[in-house]
Amino acid sequence: MTITYDSVKPWGRLFAEYVGMFALTESELRGKRILGCGDGPASFNVEATAQGYRITSVDPIYALTVAQIEQRIAETWQQIHAQMIRNLDMFVWTAFNNPDEVKEARLGAMRQFLADLDQGRDEGRYLDASLPDLPFEDASFDLALCSNFLFLYSENLSTDFHIAATVEMCRVAREVRIFPLMGLANQESEHVVPVIEALTARGWIVERVPVAYEFLRGANQMLRLRR
Ligand SMILES: C[S@@+](CC[C@H](N)C(=O)[O-])C[C@H]1O[C@@H](n2cnc3c(N)ncnc32)[C@H](O)[C@@H]1O
Figure 1 (tube, helix red, strand yellow):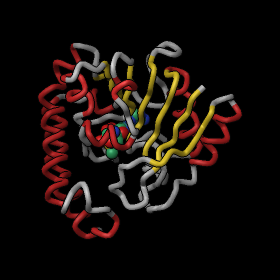
Figure 2 (spheres, protein in one colour):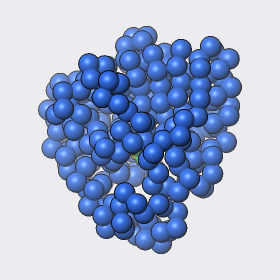
Figure 3 (tube, protein in one colour):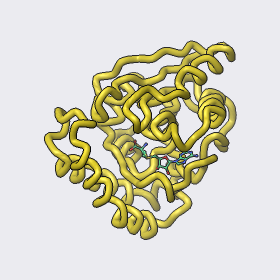
Figure 4 (cartoon, rainbow, N blue to C red):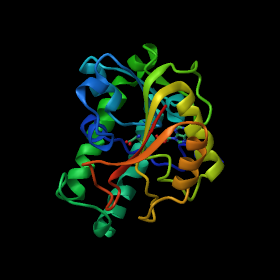
């Protein structure tokens, strides 16, 4: 099964959060070809582009118009904000002090994304594509990132889907990083070990790497896959 934008609510993170989630360094970004899988309405692409980095983002929501995505955000943000208030203990309140600060940061990121979407589409920076099928040649990217999609929605997506999606990212990029390893049930996803085993068997070096970023409590590791 493939999650569509109907079942994953639009909620976009900032460039600084991507840097934290994936422990990205300047030398890993500068001059490199970077793919973001499931970037949705994050401001990663627009902020990184403004700094001169080369980012391509794929997500099925890029099939929608700016007005359609805007409407979807308007329909869902209050629900996400209310859920956060009801579940304060699920989060680590250091980078953000409270749900209102998260709301402001996320809505700000999504506004930046929406203002950039049409131009970015024209420039080929936002492509309507879905894992596990990416429209790129082998090794087209130096690094592929996947944030808050794989593993997080473990209950909706099968182990086979996770393996196929990771194999596909490894086909198109020399290195892959996935964050977080936890599902929404606040424990490591049951798909992590099968993904590690499947990719190790294909000759990839796979490691769980601790990162400084932690917002969902306990979600402070990424999966790093290298040839
Ligand atoms: C929770 S959002 C995360 C957005 C962004 N990566 C971030 O961390 O802020 C998950 C994204 O996955 C996208 N998505 C759903 N199915 C997908 C698929 N099969 N392939 C790639 N992305 C998908 C959704 O449209 C949504 O934008």
